[in-house]
Image (cartoon, rainbow over all chains, first blue to last red; front, side, top):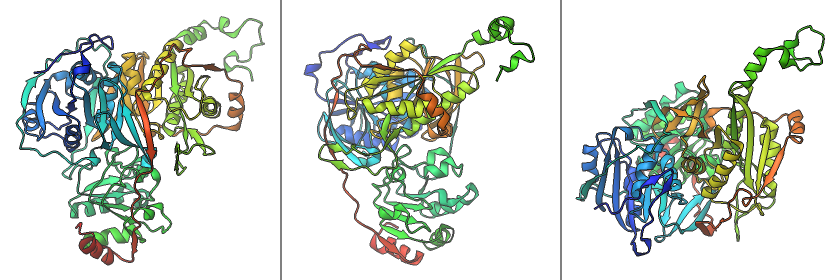
Amino acid sequence: MLGRQFFVKNGRRLLTSNISSRNASCLVIAEHDYKAISQGTLSTVTAASKIGDVSMLVTGSGIDEVVKNASSIDGVKTVLAADNEALKNNIAENLAHVVANLSGSYSHVLAPASNNSKNFLPRTAALCDCSPLTDVSEVLSEDTFKRPMYAGNALATVQMSDKIKFILIRATSFDKANVGGGSANVDNVNVDLGEVKNAGNFISATVAASDRPDLTSARVVVSGGRGVKAAENFPIIFDLADKLKGAVGASRAAVDAGFISNEHQVGQTGKVVAPELYIAAGISGAIQHVSGMKDSKVIVAINKDKEAPIFQISDYGLVEDLFNAVPDLTKKV
Amino acid sequence: PRPFFLGNRQPSRKPPCSHFPDMLHRTLQTKLRALVGVKRVIDYTVKIRVGANGVVTDGVRHSANPFDENAIEAAVQMKEKKIVNEIVAVTIGGPKSVEVLRGSALALGCDKAIHVKLDSDDTQLEPLLVAKALQKIAGEVEADMILLGKQAIDDDCCQTPQLLAGLMDAPQATWVSSMEIADDKKSVTITRELDDGLQKLQVPLPAVFSTDYRLNEPRFPTLPNIMKAKKKPLQEKTLADLGITDTTPRIKVKAVSEPPKRAAGVTVKSVDELVDKLKNEAKCI
């Protein structure tokens, strides 16, 4: 059962619900690649399970396979399937409209704190006149959460009072829910985007295909920074990552300089990672980069500058030229 | 120096444009007005400290949020290309926030500024309220494009542009790394950064843009421009002036603490030692 729907017209909710009698019920907005639900979404399910019953919304065009996958996630009771051509490219205006129309039935609407969800979830919250919360790293209760600020150098405990709590979850702070044990009901959502007048028009996307594990959930990450000096040198980072079956990350400096493309950036406004092993080569360790990787279990720093700030947070620091150390390490691991 | 289009003619008492109908026509063509949001934040180089009352801000260096500088630069470049004919900068903050208007926005090329003045420099308005204030300002100045930095580096919320677009029911273009305005000035083609690559969108105006560092390289204000900035119009308003009377936060900060510190690490002398430690001590390979 979907519960009552709240229609959004001209950016405002038309109906109000009898909210005082509502128990906590969570809607997790899934991310996927049309095959599997993303790791970040699985962590969001865990976070949501600490709050209340969990339903999951899967959107896109041609989502049968991934909906089946979603319905087997441990802890998910219902899967809502919104299958529509207009939802193919995650256009924020369309997604926000669909999610806002469903939000009224839930006390909490959650998504992983990725670029994709950060794009549409705050917009959805605005449509519902609610104040969203980004990057939640701990769930203390239905309305109280912890989240990092100032590039992770301060931790705030906050209390939300809106009737619908829109929350973006810091996926690295929560274990991933298991896939395969659950058997959720599947409900189809009627998608009506007639009200959406001013959506962006999709032209194209260049998505980097990779055989390597996903950066945000890999067990090992090897990152290169400004010290790698040129794009032609980045293969020494790739080689080490491949030997360790890990993902490749980069500092902002490396991406700005064109050594590697933007989706590898780890940091305050890039990706947040917390692998078992993080190897930073040629990365000085600015606050902004550290913010994205300081929850890693083991941090290794390789830098020829012994004063580099990265050595203050590394577990193992090797002061050596990365052009010697990294290929040598690749041979010996 | 005399305007180039007058050539070698003797100066006349009539204004130049009446001599040159073509020039008049060109100046009346559609040009856009940009609204740029700027926030005063603790400077990104500062190592912040958490005190009894939260993050220590007294005596700590503040500056314009770095991503907002990308927004200002984008607007100024469009003005130089004569795509935009007026840039209005806005900040919502306590008394000291005027620094980011005079010292950054106006000094870098914005034409006028609006300071929505809060009582205290320490008030952190939640993004939804900021977005509501920006919505009112955007309406008042009749902005065609609103450019905001993608994220404020103090609260790291990364929400205001998206909230604003939702409130305005306007299209949004977030994490923009390139912008191309259409010849008819009715839309903008942007490239934006995704989790797994890049996306190209065409966005009709008016729209909200959130700017990312790869969009441009912000210029530094020159001394002459800093001096000129002192004379540019700067208007003060309050939230009440904008019709925003309820400023009760929906999200209350109960406590701020420092995160747990990592235990100190060790230096290894060679790759061999590193491999040994990773295998036998850390047991992660």
